[in-house]
Image 1 (tube, rainbow, N blue to C red):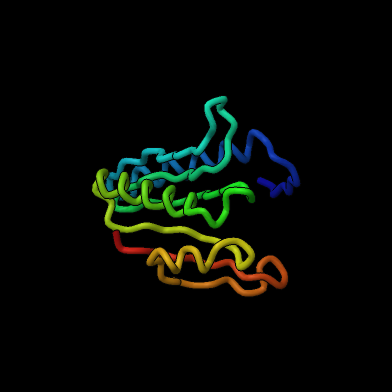
Image 2: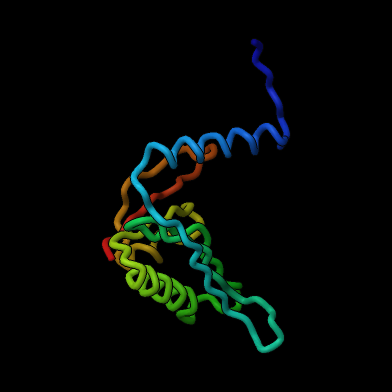
Length: 136
């Protein structure tokens, strides 16, 4: 047996991911995972904003929320987040989780009732990464 360092994506990295997911499925409680994705586009299909998330058991986990610069401050992000939370409630979720950087949207999430769980300081060197949750 020997240890090998790789500095690139490989089939082995995918295999390790598959192995841990299989192990987790055997050990954790049963919970359904379902994508929850919302988009804002024009009649031609040009994308202006979107929210990429999933519901997992009791939780809505927001992975990405993006609004193009020209639409910011017009409530588009708020509507996306509210629609995601409503759909998550329809899926019987009780909580929501999101993380964001100091230059992204910490105040936005606070205005929407999210509470800080913890913060990574000096991330990746001088910044902060905030982790928030909300009771739905």
